[in-house]
Amino acid sequence: MSIVFLSLQACAQQKPVVDYDHSKNPYYSHTSQTPVTASNDFWVKILPPEVYQIAREQGTEQPFTGKYWDNHKKGIYYCAICGNPLYSSDAKFESGTGWPSFYQVLDPASVFLKADADGERTEVECKRCHSHLGHVFDDGPAPTYKRFCMDGDVLDFVPTK
Image (tube, rainbow, N blue to C red):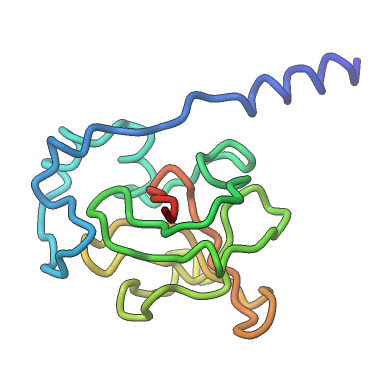
């Protein structure tokens, strides 16, 4: 019985990589700091359903299934919704949670932290487009002791050349 369970669990963890065509998004930029005020009606038309559910409805992907939980390349992580630079691979660490985790953001002004609706966690939002990215916890490594636990499907990664 447990063999079947393990096989089903392994299959569940293999999902297609969620990407979308940024050419349909007039707000996507790695350099603009202009705040994005697009409505959810706009986002639902251009984002894949999985990305919309996380970014605009504060959802989450299943652990060990997102694009970057096991990425070990050097580079920069951006908001997949608007292109805002968020994290450096230099701050990424193995948290064992199944989500990409970072101990600090590139620039504290790039994210907004707010109490989650349940009052138990702190939500991390992209400051430029107000999309949900994940949560931050106080159990990370030195020097910050923070764990920015992000949903990989709402991140883009550009490797260092």
